[in-house]
Image (tube, rainbow, N blue to C red):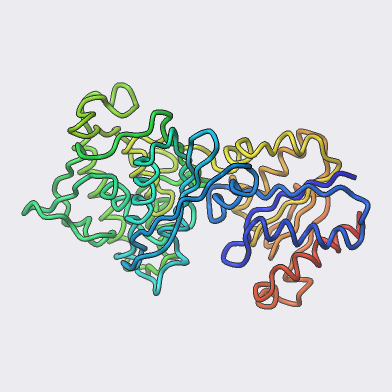
Amino acid sequence: MTVVIAPDSFKGSASAAEVAEALAAGWAEVRPGDEVVLAPTADGGEGTSDAFAAAVPGSVRHPVRVLGPSGDLVDASWLELPDGSAVVELAETSGLGLLHAPAPFDAHTIGFGQAIAAAVDAGTTSLLLAIGGSASTDGGAGVLTALGARLLDGAGTDIAPGNRGLAALVRADLTGMRPLPPGGARILSDVSNPLLGPRGAAAVFGPQKGANLQDVPQLDAGLARFAEVLDAAAVPGARASGRPSDVGRGAAGVGAREVSADDPGTGAAGGTGFGLRIWGADMTAGAPAVAEALGLPARIASADLVITGEGRYDSQSASGKAPEHVAELARRAGVPVLLAAGAIAAEPTSFADSVALADLAGGSAAAIADPLRWARAAGAALASRT
C-alpha cells in the first residue's frame, strides 16, 4: 500500500515532522513492503513553519532576534518560500512556551510584529501568518506597534506593552504602519471566536494564559478600549473597500482597515486576529490553507491509506483542527484514515481506527516524556491491525 502520514505537531512535545517519522518507523516494522509518504501538516499553530520547510523544497529560514513575550530577546526566524512569499509563526516569536511565568496582563506580541516587519522589509511578496499558541491577550497591539503604529495615552506617551497598557489608550496613530506586501497577508487560524464577550479572547483563552476569574473582565475591558480607539483611528475610505485605504500610503505610511470586534476570528491568539485584520490581513481557516499550500489533497488522493494525529484529540478537534481536515480530505478521496493522538478525549468517529499514545505508555505523563518512542509504537500498533 501507499500510506500517507500527515500528523499535526504534538504541541510542546514533538514537531509534526518528528511525529510523522516516528509513526512511519513503527509502521515499517510491521509492514516493511508499504510505500510511506511523509506529509507533516499544521493548522496555523505551533509547527506551521516547520511543516512548510519540510514540504516545500527551496524554502529558506531567515534568523531574526525579537522581543519575546516576557520582554527578553529570543532567537526566532521567518521562512521564505520559493515563490517569494513568507511564513511567520507567532508561536516561535510570541508563544506561550516562551514565557518564563504566566503574565496575562504583560505578555505581548511585539516579537511577532518584528518578525513580520523583517519579512516585509526583505521584500516578501505575500505573507502567511500562523497565529496559534499565543502567550498574550493584547489584541495584537504589539504587532501593530512593531509595524509602525503608535498607541498613545492622554499625555501623548506610548502605552505599556501587553493588555495592561490598553486601559490607558486614548489615541492611535496608524499612519506610520508598513504597507502590506503586494500579495497581501493571510492569517492562518482555526479559531472563530470574536474579540470580546463571553466567547471572546479574554474569556475563552485568558485562563489558559494564567488569568483568573477576576482578571478576565479587566482583560476584556482593555480589549474593548483597544477596539474602540482603533475603530476611531481607521482611515476614511477603508470602510467602503474593506481593504487597507490608499490614503496615507508612501512616506506617510498606510491607513487601516475598519474591523468589527464581532467578526469571527478577531479573538484568535489573544485578539491578534483583530490587530492583523486592522492592518489589512485576511482571515483564513488554517488547516485547509496549509493543506492546500503543501499539496496535501493530491497526496491523499493517490494514497491507499492515511494516518493523521495531534497531541490531544478532543471536542475542539472537529472545529477546524488539522486531523479533522485531513480526515475530510481522505473521505472525499475515498481513502481510509487512521488517528494516532497523544490522548483521545472524544469519540474519534471520523476514523477507521485510532490509538492513543497515553494508552500504550500507561499514562499521559509517560507518553509526554518520550513522545517519539510511543508514536513509533502507535505506528506499529495501527499497522498490526490493518
